[in-house]
Length: 352
Image 1 (tube, rainbow, N blue to C red):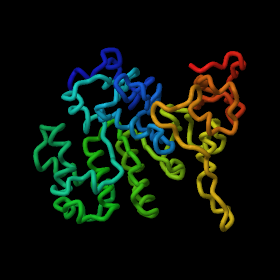
Image 2: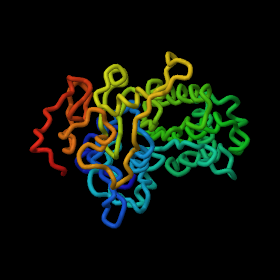
Image 3: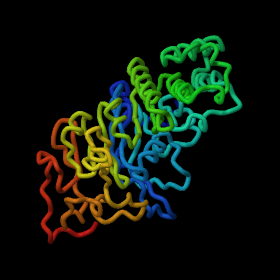
Image 4: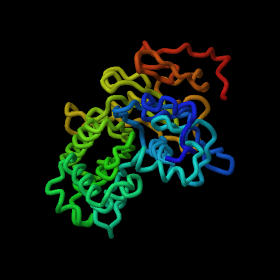
């Protein structure tokens, strides 16, 4: 890997470094980045850990994932913060250096495999491409063997016959397995999975989630799983990070978040999940209002206009409070009393 990606401080202990560290990442659009899309995002994913990044559409989840890949839109301006993968800092790296990083240290599984795959190339060739780029000492036979090994790990039936097929010849579930194989074949430190099961039916979705979890565990690969589906979070994740208005508003282990959500937005997401005990004809819970567009978030807590607990104090941005082991929240009025921070006095509540 090019030395431009290596932070001389972090690289001294790369083997112990987390798979991913996002530190106060701030991105904006516009001539001076005045329309902020990510506002001080901080998130850590340990090696071998699956962390779900959840929130409604427009919260900044996919932009965060693309930023980790160095694929954020060209009009996005970096206003602050950094991204480090396995001890290598990628923020500010050249495009040449990033090409050596993508597919080697980090890979991405996109939502729609039919769109993401090249329709004119066999899936076997596409899966082996990262090996040809990043493992140049491997022979053609070794690349083929490695591709077949990964397909076997993913439970693809008759993998040798699949190598020569084009994407349109495969079912939706098999196409998605091929996308996962492309990401896993170089055994990267981190995989970004951006809602990879949304287009699949429920049965196939469950199979893909199980396959992804088992394969990444076998290889020790960390996963940042981007989704809006809290059911998927319960199925695959170790920890969850809840995102709203370009900020992380709560993090914690999945079981604890589901049992005792601290942020009102997390609580609203969980209340919106369909439940079998809802009577026929009953209405699902809907959070009033909409996610603010970049640059249109209110002063203070971005969830304030939609929050049933909002007070005058909320026009000041709440601090990040770590209130238990591996748990944190940014809220003046968390629904878990153990997470409560000292709210400012009304006279102190000025927009910042």
